[in-house]
Length: 578
Ligand code: PEP
Ligand code: MG
Image 1 (cartoon, helix red, strand yellow):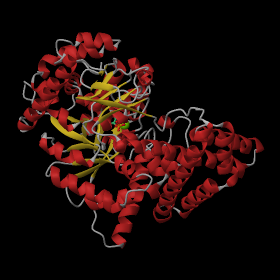
Image 2 (cartoon, protein in one colour; image 1 turned 180 degrees about the vertical axis):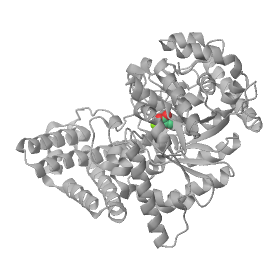
Image 3 (cartoon, helix red, strand yellow; image 1 turned 90 degrees about the vertical axis):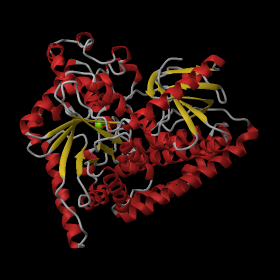
Image 4 (cartoon, protein in one colour; image 1 turned 60 degrees about the horizontal axis):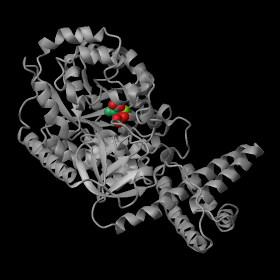
């Protein structure tokens, strides 16, 4: 079965098919004799959901406004409400259906009734019901997930979809690979799989219908394919390719001091993208010239449903600064929202979260959630060259509003006589077309830009980066994308501020080479890919690139551009992104 080579490496093992949180809920009939067991499963789930809510409530009361804590309390009450819980139990028994379906159907039925009454506070209660039922669904899902601990040896997770937080949770268990139906090379689940070095193949249509529990599989994340019931020859091929990969890594670590310099002597800085703390040492081992992007939202995702404390943030930032010294560390303020924990933080669902309350918007809308992180950043700024970067900026006002938050946090720390500094470089991600167009104005406010090509492509091509159905439109070599990147590089050069690229384009040897030819001198990518990109950069002459790149920028399609550049790009046959 063919899919996308999402996370490199290969793994062999038996399949475990899991239902994801995002998966639709199915109505399953159960035998009369199974009704008691299903009611028991529901009761356990209610208990787990109540513990979840209690943890979230306690956290909310301490860390956020008391008002939010009240919402959790209301949810916990709802969970015990006989009008809700009793109706679910009744449905399981009378309709003989699975608990997931009974929860779903009951919540929908009651929410509809509340909506029809058209009274504001009852409508809110309807929304609460949907939220509580999500907690219950998650707890029910978790109950079946617990079976994972009983599986012997490593296993391969097969699913329709995985959220980034599920990928972190599963990736840290004995999961040897992921095989999923949705996703792309730039989806956050993929990014996490790569961070944890879990091979992954994404975008395999019909996978969950073809694979069942315990089927032996090879997931080949290098070539983007799944081998079901592999032959002896395939198993040997898999072992050999893994040995070669480990040898390549070892060579990369040995060559970490080799400079990333083009044939005509232009020095490029290769920095590391970090999602999880375990990658910090890897960044140093592979010779990264600092951390160019730390996706701090993963601290939140890992701690969910609780919020991370100021000390937890500080501990991670300190570790990064110490390990990378004297090189800089760019911490991106949390980019929650989109597919990353938005509903959990906001306690409400959005129709279109990728265009909704995400990144800096959420930071500014819920400053109380951000406050501990901001205090930790100001404290960490005294320890080394910390740089702070804002995600999803679309207006100058967002940067200005952020600066007001900084001033307030500094005042608070000063009042408590806690050592801190506001003397850090502030930067913005350039990842929406609006930011490209106001780059000169943004350059007046900040001291660096980092181009987030993952989102820039998503928002400029109007293509969901996670949607395999339109992945053909996800074109890093599209003239619109390349012209935007070049324009931002020129604005940065004119304003005298640093411009880097931290999207996945920087991790593709071809695209990275092109970025350098477009004027970029700093790239940030997953640490283990640094040797591969360095090799590509060392093989190119920018002088020779000038003409084909100029010609390419004037062409109309990605296909024409790739063709025009094929003599210049280092590895045309291994083009991953075009
Ligand atoms: C990007 O959008 O390119 C980026 C680096 O940020 P993320 O992948 O976390 O959205
Ligand atoms: Mg982004």
